[in-house]
Image (cartoon, rainbow, N blue to C red; front, side):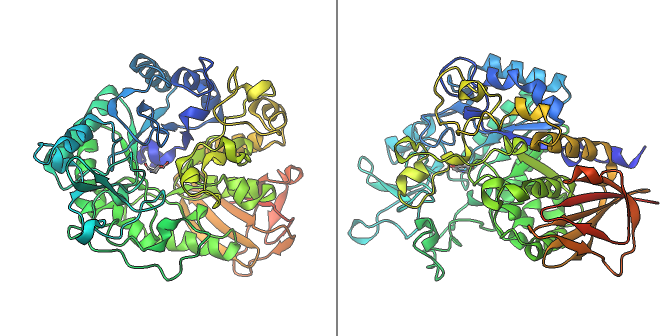
Length: 534
Ligand code: NOJ
């Protein structure tokens, strides 16, 4: 058995995130849907991704665009039917790909039957499935905890004279994961989808799932600045990342392990030393705690180099790394670092050790789209106006071609497409050898083909104010990756690292195939992959 066979699909492969409202509309309502995704599977297969993660597609009042679920086991009619889902799953599998669903266990919609029961009376059997607390003295909120989407995290219920806790919108009450019946109900939900054959879950806000049993106040954040979200006024040490969460994650993992070959990915925004705890004792926690460092740190060579080093050395033995540049809650990478560095980011994502997740549209260099205030749809943007916190700009329709609405829909889409879509789209970029899409395709092909790049070892080689360089190696095959993180040209000559090989890939395609030995001139915004001689 070759070395590659020891690795499972989610280690070797590439994940692609689809935001379903914005991928492809098939029925002319301006919102993407499951048959739309189905119609674009050939594209995803061509691109060479291994797994598709779809953000929530379940029944929902859509207060938070599907992250407020009112029935975990049915599909919202906007997206289609369960039959559409089954067809999609079959077709994904037929192409040798995997399908990952979003699991939102921290909260439901306030329209979920569980919550309707829970709020119906204090002695309802499901009362304890949510987090209910008495008012403080003079009717005040039970503690100072804040909602991520602005304001207090407590909502008063007139009928039963208690507050309930919601880390996000008041329409998203938090579930009480200390309750064993709730745990069982959610594990059964997982099994329902796993029995259908889904290949895994991306678990929403995993680090929020258990709160301090004593409901202590969170401390004030002395570094808070008024342009930031109001949630950041406090440090959420009592409302998130509690020690008991690891038991829950462990139990969820045990459910995954009842099935072959499934993956559990955790959405977790924490510093690296806390993040890696979610691999769990003996790696019995989440397979992949999402590593969001590249979307939070400044785009500087020194920072990126040390983040990679710290992450690599913080990983528990046997813990598999992963990397992400953006998602539906964050600005697109190109809007953070600018167009000149976008190919460097792609090279980084696809040559680092660990599973890469591509956010739809990243591969064609989609940028955040300017949305006028009267078109804002995101509750985070609407609740905290003036802070530019709306997530709509990075959730706009996929740009497929130069026809009206970018080939996404026949009618005006739920969010606008940018003026630039006639030149930034899949169809045009497939025809141009130097487009972002062609670059992604080449990188993906190389990563798939070369064990050194998909499962190989990582070794850092060099960094300075402009460059980072590292080695990927598996067996006899070795690649040196050299990335210039600035716009200025520079010279690469790591004294203690003589090398010899051929340029396999460069952002300057004229250099491909040229020999490279011991040093390299590097243009501004250039990245190179050198195939080293044995
Ligand atoms: C994280 C999701 O990614 C985000 O879109 C959502 O608003 C919150 N969780 C609440 O579910």
